[in-house]
Image (cartoon, rainbow, N blue to C red; front, side, top):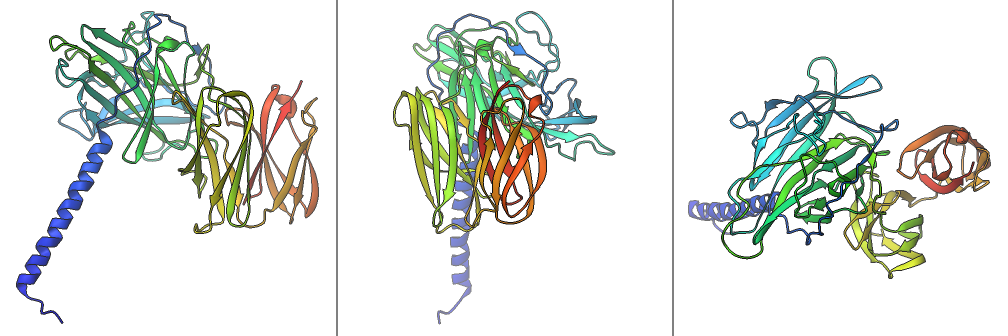
Length: 492
């Protein structure tokens, strides 16, 4: 046995401390890198100088709109209320079914910027109208922009709470149908330089779509640093008036939270300064006004989301999930990311399927996921469909069980449905209760009913279809352990 001495103990301690120091440095460097140094966005589009008004409308039932007005500093950075770590509170930003909703906004990170005004309730838009309910910070470079290219941003996290007795900022509110709009993503330029604003959101599992107007001046701007991904847009180099809501410089971020409500979202408002020639002159350090809101609207001519998904299904074959999907109009389209989850909420990418080419016809894809070395009995899958410009959309979520399904052979007849009358047919392996849901194209559950089923073949009347508008819907059946989807058309 090796003799253990005080000297050897000191050497071991020094070695251990060295290893720990290196690990700490790597950890700190990784965390620092995860917060800063975003890559440059793609080249800007030419400015159109058009101003197409947004199409605003009251949010449908189940959606969420908010009024961010009269915020007050609460905690986190007492020396600088506009510094990193500061938390601001907003009371009564919304009322949902009689429940008051409060909110906090935390300044997560300030990189190469300074926040001169946290939220300007008096900011005016292109028509000289104030919109006090918008969140409108003023953000400036933290040093004069001259001969060196530079990027910066402020990262905010919005968190929602139920108003209650005592502290009204402890009971988080799980919200459905969140829509976030970033307005006034514009820029400016001079001799040998340009400055472009950027607006992004964290790409969380609930993020359904990232969209812009068909005649947009924006370019898709997506990146991943560390463990987080960000999706959004970068501007052209032309300045707009005030906190403009022109559709050409606005972006829409919609969250599909039917199965996983959202209590907070994180966003980044920043800039890209590019020195293109020469060394004299530059932008300086003037603050720029940003604007955003939570609410519902549609672009007059929204860019079509990538590819049309006709079907997405899967099956279990000897510890392997076999996924199948069929698409149409695969034009200017790049690839499919296949994502898997064990709980239906937290997804991770397991593979990529490149598009077979640009075509207007239909194409069929198949992907095999070997689960022989993976523990668990139930797995969830979805597709992230990405076009050549980086815009993306998620498919519906399907669930695959490794053991025998309780429900088999679901169908709806007739299909298409007419006169609001339809029957669901299915085969059950045992007696139990199922829930039927009708889901529209936005992922919103608009009808639901529960029925008892018996071992063998069952027929269930689907109620209240006459209330719905004509269109394409998804019938979803849940038996407590599995979930089955089937699309159907509804006619007048």
